[in-house]
Image 1 (cartoon, rainbow, N blue to C red):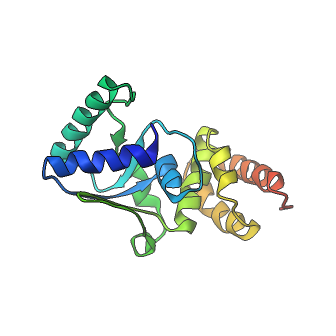
Image 2: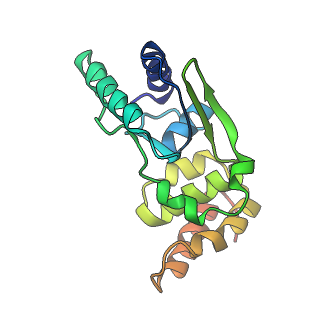
Length: 179
């Protein structure tokens, strides 16, 4: 999906149904709307709140409508996949939210930069597929250092801390830093 276009069209779709929805979006959709990346994404990750049933059903209808006109969109394109991160985000994360999109019926915010970096670094270490997004964010060496400890505590596997160190040290080197 093309995040900017899809979110704009979904806002119009919600408005036509007189439904409003405000949420915190993260992941590739947030990065695309912020202008950090220009790639397409598979979905729109909603961190908070849990997507209400009426909005979920409208998102599915919207996906079917978009697919009919040639814009392939997964039925679950709007999802709460990363919601489990809420319990581990550093205190005060809600106070650091920044505006992302404000339409007629849809209002999205995203995590502030330190928290957004942490979630992307965690995704890099967990899935190994977010390297380009991490590079596009151009984190400073200080931002990487500040995030390492948080990422280390996101998995109980005894090998996880070493894996995190290696992954983020490799990222730092690719960015031209020596950690």
